[in-house]
Image 1 (cartoon, rainbow, N blue to C red):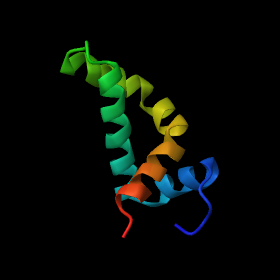
Image 2: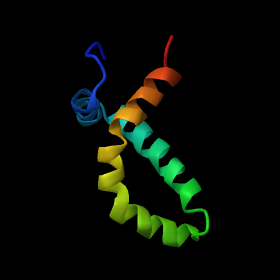
Image 3: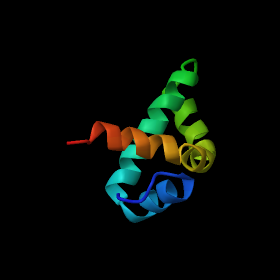
Length: 73
């Protein structure tokens, strides 16, 4: 990704790259899981279904930056 990283560029990258989107979703989901540690797996899965769109939107920039940092080389 050669575009400077901003919210728009991060969201475009997630929409265009299914592998990046999957990685970002798992990264955001694991981060959310640490916040919701008191939930059972079933409760968390239901919780994630409802908050996923919001977390994917608001966490896009941070997730793409984490992906780029992890996959540098």
